[in-house]
Length: 237
Image 1 (cartoon, rainbow, N blue to C red):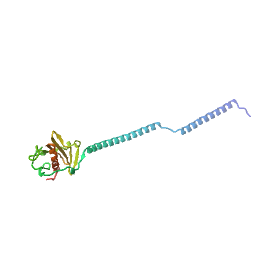
Image 2: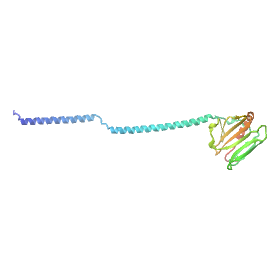
Image 3: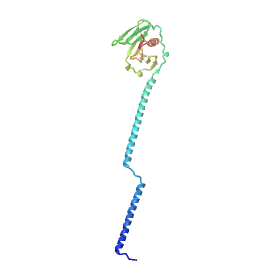
Image 4: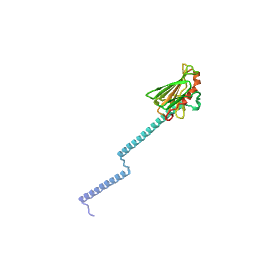
């Protein structure tokens, strides 16, 4: 067997070293590739953007829910206020109001508002106009048993002045609603006012004033009859 010359030995060692280096290099590349395939790639920028978009959508839904909830609360509060106003009124059956029509056979009529109302025999009246339109009528007794005589004032009222909170009782009539309180006694002078809410352009109030509680109680049923006789609106003449 021939001995290797020093030159050939160097060449063989160099070749072996080169092969080992290449083998180690390729092994590192393969191991790195395997490691990269096993570890999931994360696009941090994409996740951040998606998170921001989700937060905006959630906030938008929350805001919509809050707006809907506030709207519902306001609706419930408004309904509660309306119910409270209605509940504060004592609904009275019209049949429970005794109306004495005895001797109420005189008729006052007025054409600017197509209005008519009956008043007792032995009474007279004076009416007031405003801008060639009825503003009010005052009736009083010129003969009878009452001393001093009672008087009744009918007034045409602007509808925006109406406030149901001012009244205790409510009576539904076929073409209007009555609102009124208990009679007021001021130093022996008794008064009671009935507000008449209509579907027309004008509302009305009718007020009775007379001296003495006993006389007032005796006349109150006639007062209800007078108010019930009020007719208004188109086509009554």
